[in-house]
Amino acid sequence: MKIGIVCYPTYGGSGVVATELGMALADKGHEIHFITYNQPVRLDFISHNLHFHEVMMEEYPLFQYQPYELALSSKMVEVVEKYKLEILHVHYAIPHAYAAYMAKQMLKEKGIEIKVVTTLHGTDITLVGSHPNYKTAVEFSINNSDVVTTVSKSLKEDTLRLFNIKKDIQVIHNFIDTDKYEKAHEQECQRIALAQPNERIFTHISNFRPVKRIEDVIRTFEIVHRAIPCKLLMVGDGPERRNAELLVKKLGIKKDVLFLGNSSEVTEILCYTDVFLLPSKTESFGLAALEAMAAETAVISSNSGGLPEVNVHGVTGYLSDVEDVEDMANNALKIVKDDATLLQFKQNAKEHTKQFSIKNILPVYEDIYESLKVNVN
Image 1 (cartoon, helix red, strand yellow):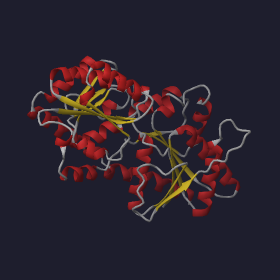
Image 2 (tube, rainbow, N blue to C red):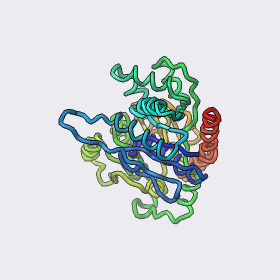
Image 3 (tube, rainbow, N blue to C red):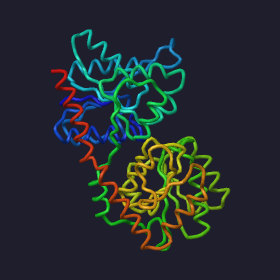
Image 4 (cartoon, helix red, strand yellow):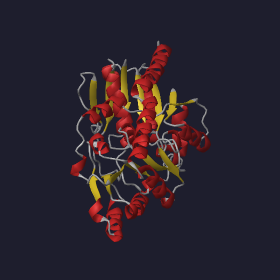
């Protein structure tokens, strides 16, 4: 099949999932066309079935803000016409679902029918999409998609609560390539480069936005740090990084906290990790937690959003109420108290991720595409 994928090309979860999905589809022989303003960060052109089409923005003095959705919908029309695409799969409601609807109407004028699959990922619904300035357009776009999916049961419930949705919504959990993490573990893990043998390693990976509660990561680690020798790896970048660095200095733990910035070597970093910290205010799914678990890492997280669908309390890690850093720290200490307990949590985490393997999830998307293709014919 010929499929167009529209996503944000950044390190965020929606872009990562869309990119991994596209590459897996290409490996299966489908012709995949990415349509966005930059090449997605994880896109690897190892398959001749992968193509990238850049959405170009022209600057005009008339516009204070460039109308990206217009340029995007026009590019969708161009790519669908030129390459005879059958499906447009858009990730993130704003502005992708709306732009896809506009592209669909323009193509209809040309006698071309294109089917649109919209996958909702989180803040496009719960934070931005539900804002009065966008709600009507987002609701309209969702209801006029041919198929709508969400990445968790929690997000589906939020979508139905916040919008008047007339479409069926199918839950398809986020996924990971478990083979990739198997290969990473087969390589020698140079843990000694970051910590002493008696030190536990904690890691946090995110875009350092306020919703990730970065200061709670630091405060949780600081409580643990008082009890045992340990290191904290902070991976990513964003608006809260500066405050986090200042807090680390204030708490006197600077020598044991490493800020590594954005990295494309996440699997290697997780190889070193004992416990992953994710105290987010909300997570539609918790892809970072799932990636950590696949790398055989226990997870300490909040119990918000879709995280309970990923992190099993007392089995793969522990769940705590948002802001309860004392509970998170105490739970972390339960996991790392001895080598045998830590190993059991790590093994449980890895085993649990098998149900989220791309090998299980990919056929679900393929079935959706095929059903729409039949309807076109």
